[in-house]
Every structure is written in structure tokens, then in C-alpha cells.
Amino acid sequence: MGGGKIRSVQIFSPCKAFKCERREVEEMFHFLDATGLWLVEVGELSLAFLNGEQHGRLHADFMGDPTPTDVITFPGDPRAGLAGEICVSIDAAWEYARSHPDSFENELTLYLIHGYLHLAGFKDGKEEERREMRDQEQICLSALVKNGKIPLFTYERN
Image (cartoon, rainbow, N blue to C red; front, side, top):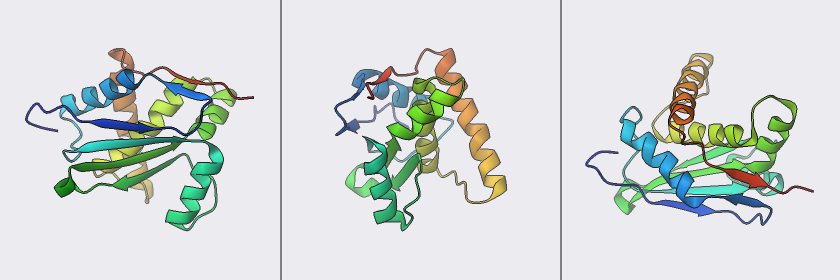
């Protein structure tokens, strides 16, 4: 995002058990924008943190696929001042983090990065595209970790 503008980030989370520091999430995207490495359209970025059921319904309704997934990205409309929307499954991140050495924060951040990269034009439909996406995800994640820009996320699941 050029011209020194700071992107507006809107956060939607209907799940009362999930908490995030809005400022930290905004700062993460402002940091990624400021690197200039990934060019996401100017405009407001919308984030939706959904539980597994909500995310699955969204996947079925908009993608015609009822199987669980972790990230769904919708492109925006720059003429309307919208960069896009990233919808993540907090349950998918929670379950993955429980059975892997990654933290919940890192896993959920990775989902947000994945959506951000889709908005920057990266695809993951073919094997070569998936490899490039994974490489870019690791570059983003490493930069965020190195600069202390991983947001704090908490999920009080029963």
C-alpha cells in the first residue's frame, strides 16, 4: 500500500470465547503493508474470526464446498475503498495448534497471512503456486516474529 496511508482494518468476531487485541492485529497488517513486498489494493481490510460451524457454512454457501477449511478470502472493490475480506476459522487454528508445536497465535496469524497473500495476487490452486504461497507465508511470518508483530489471540474453548 503506497503513499504512506495507513489501512483501516475492521474486525468481526461473533464468537464470545475468542479475544484479540485489535491494535496488534492492525499493526500486523500495517507492518506487512509498509514492507512494500506484497501489494494489496488500497482500502479497508475486513477480518472475520469465525468458529468452525460458521466458517463451514460460509465455505458451503460461497464456495459450494461443505468440507472444513481454515481461510476464505474475498477480493475487495478498490473503487469502493475495500481491499478485501479474510475469514479465518479459529477452531481450525485451535485444533492444529493442539497437535503441533506451533502456537495458536502463530497458526491463526498464518491464516491471516495466507488471506493477505491471496489479496496480493498469490494463488494456491496448482502445486507450483502452493510452493510459492508457502515460501511467501514463511517470509511474512518470519518478519512478523522478528519484529514482534504477532498479535495476541486467546480462545477460551470448553
